[in-house]
Length: 111
Image (tube, rainbow, N blue to C red):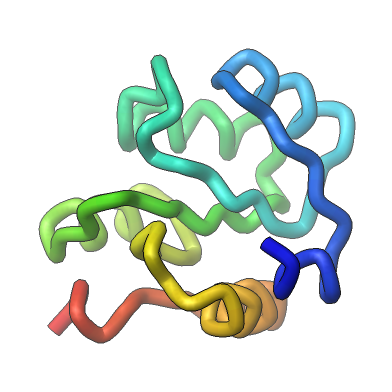
């Protein structure tokens, strides 16, 4: 996360309730969201988070990225979809690209 700390202020949350609270209070430009966070419920949870802060661009992180999940999450409104093992420098690049309004998806995920 050091690569990200160079370009942004980080706030951590350990559960969905904390994510919702921070999202409502801070209205960040970018939200890096671990898809394995308890009670997220995939696309439904993503939609709920987008309602809290519609201007926040969400980049999803997952331990096992798949084309099916990546496609469905992008269709649900995510602006990025990445594997957890992504190189930190590449993750920082993904954040910068999404800040500019682009979508970020790993080449291995979406053909």
